[in-house]
Image 1 (cartoon, rainbow, N blue to C red):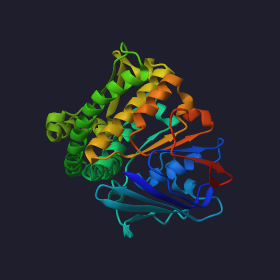
Image 2: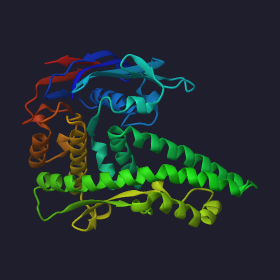
Image 3: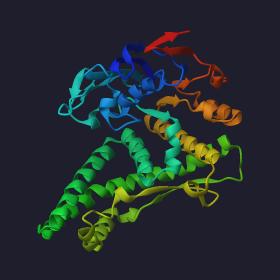
Image 4: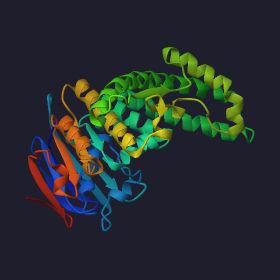
Length: 364
């Protein structure tokens, strides 16, 4: 996949900007706060319909403006794909999605036309953060790969909200018999989520183990990822039904659903010890990089072409050995790499270097 152009309008620090990066590595240099990350965020927004930094879309709109837009054009094996997102500060107005010159009614229609893997300092939270962060990582990867997964996830969370609302109503005299309907709908939505997560984690485990060994350079440290779920993945539908039935009294007492994919976790271990609990900062960072490289491999294999790579000021966090090994691994794809110091990308052999200053982008 090749990024042909990125166009922004009143997006964060940019009034108007157009980038046309060449194949290979484009390095974006600027001081902290200059707006380097905003460019990568705009690409991510077009790929997945959401920011990797915030859940509040209005934060991506320039302070003086009521709307912002990001448009992306990419070349793929099957031709050119053009996607875009327009955001509105007014809360009543939904974001507008554009796919190949037409508005799209569903987020699933946008996802998959352009795919990306982003490396950022926040990746450490995938290892050191809570289960919700790791579920989000899995969900974003699987959504880019398979639209049915994205729609199943939407259906699951919509049904979960309805079931939780009923549980709260039951506490004030609502009809508990209605839970039968919502339990069945929740189980039907949960089954494909669990199955696909299980398959994906199996792939990530093998790939990330090899990447960790290469980047870390320590063969004695064995990295593994495993799926933690209360559902039997071999018979997910029946298992989820049974779990909901068994937990019904507890759910009514707590007024929330206590079992299901929304409670799953991705367990990360190094030499049979929990990385979340015992891993050092260096080990956690290497594990996060290994997972992202594994994501890159999965997307490349599935699509028959590599996704876009977005590296947000990650090289400065690595020692020279890990930095060089990461650069070597990502040379096969088109990449946008941000840094504050030109020495950070030594060995990256950039095709173009851009400088971000005062809301503008200047080619050196």
